[in-house]
Length: 239
Length: 239
Image (cartoon, rainbow over all chains, first blue to last red; front, side):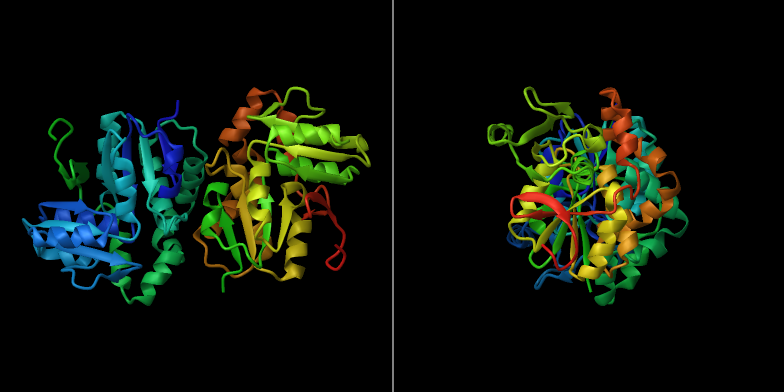
């Protein structure tokens, strides 16, 4: 029985069969952490788009535009990719079009074939796990990675989710990351701050973002792609 | 300073710049373990080839043919992919043409650009590490993986080699695998036997191969691709 797989990069997703599966896309620094935070703070929905031009066009259609490339805010957009911008219900009721270096690409690559696409972050880890346990579908955790390569924070999130799910699996990536997560979980933040991406973000002087993105279970919500937009999934039966 | 990277799959090798680097190709179960064992037992050289047809043609030119697909010996070949076949200097002085599911593909993909290509296995771990420390070139460890996916045994070998090299790096894969290797090294064999590939091999009733491939430092030799063939690298100055 193989009910759980981890894919470490969108560049490897073609090796997996997504049909019938719940795909959890994760981009801890910072796309999916930001999406979860935005939804928890009353943003109506988030439309992930791959390129800057589509994002800009949606801006003309009434969306707030949010985006970064290589960790830097995009010129002319309303927002960058910091989850902190959405706190205090700053953009309640609004719709956001968001594009990021890695995260939105991973969503695009999974939405055609998967049964459903969820948005995972440490911020809503337990809620996502509880939902998946109830859902009883095979799960693929798709790490956004960094420009196609393995990254530590997304992979360790995958290990954390695997630890909670306790699904039977036959996937070496899951075996490795579950063991590594269990080994470092008592100092998750200390270990993850060694990650290359965290180090890059430190250079951009946004260390507060890192600490925030590594907060466990701050938001008890499930974020799900419905049509073209990500919203809060209320219950298993409602859409 | 980034002197060490791990690439978890040949499908991701295009993301790395191999120029100026020593690439260590690893396919623990069983291609690179078998190559190291063959050389240690007097085989003159090993020619890795991607396809069965080329291998067969070299058979007509005087090579011993060795190959497997999906862990099973290829019909009509002299040898499969078991390192045990080469013990007791059974094929001393002979040349072997070898093709395997994952290992020879990884070698092919690296030989054009890399400065040199080494063949790594737990069997010659320390010798390879000592050589690389003396060589002082940046290192990429290229895991053969399993049909394009991450696999545990190759990745943990990479973590083991990283632990010995102690090169500075900025690579999340290395960070993850060095930490995981240090965590499980006291029961490496027990942990690796949970790996999906080890489980597959157990089904083929070749558990003795697994134990053999997980033996540390049995052979103090460095295996290197020279032209089209893999041989023993005697010293840093000799070819």
